[in-house]
View (spheres, rainbow, N blue to C red):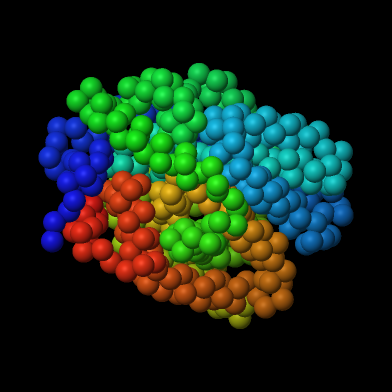
Length: 500
């Protein structure tokens, strides 16, 4: 069986790069695409900073507001209102991306986030604080849809996974920075106000930098703005590959414009191929949340205190170490995702997560009947192991796969829908964890998360395809074959792509 010549010669495909190995891009070859990914990834930093900072700020908000201190519901609402805002932001973010472009969507997200940060810092009571959290969430939700798509559409296929993973690195980096900021302001009057207000600074930086960056070249081609698109991709590819990329995107964009003219929200579920892709993409992001990552990040200081370390500052220091491991693990993931593949990485990650959650369950179960400090340290070790296994795999893999598995005409809609699934799952976990821990014990809560992680492992094993090294067109073939049966003329193509 042979691969059709037309598919072999698609720029960025495995066949094309085999014929022209000198045109293959490496991660550090082009500073322009790295800079573009880094600036777009500041949206991920906002996401990560907000996730991390609220866990430390909550310790001091409880000191300032007695009603918060006496109500688990208010504590959970302060945390989860940002997630509720993110659900709305993600739901509309896909439409904003498709209608107005990735650049304008990012600028809008920054403005909303800055307004929310100001409102949080000036909040006179918990309810104004909750309103500020809602605004911040709207900005984060839009950014969570936009950044991975913007990076993926500008990235050469052979380094797309690594570049999209830089957005996840920014998320984990934002969490790490948030803990540093939490520690820096522990002795400053108005502690939590500084912690939350400073979050507007990276949003302002991104807003200014994005004014000087271009729109996504694929979106420009789709809107028939070819001259602008060519100007962008000429800064990404060498001359030897540039003409091939232009010819391919010109032909592809004309087909996509014809298909997009009749695209509606509900068509996602009418198309069997797109429905299968969305079930995998949305399922991955749901499992990313339900295996407990944001339980660990939102409540890590509280979990550390439950483990027996009651001083706020010590809890923050130990949480800083956990956040640092998260960032380091993501750097490892950036290397592995385009070298070992998405699926293998996710399976290894989930295997380690299951073991780590069982260790956490054991630590808290034993602590109920013992005052031995060793179990407190075992809980902290379990947290560290959890992050060490989660961050290289289930951190970047779901976002990377979601940035590459949807057809162009559905990418904004499906990306927004999948991010909405992510945030709804996040909301369920964050709104219920403390109450669940109070009801059945924190150890049993971790055991439930371990059971969910086992289901996630089976989901990845059975349903998630390997997309390493494949172009967007080659990924579409996967869903076509899953929906309607294998085409012998393209079977080898996918094997070559996943091995390159």
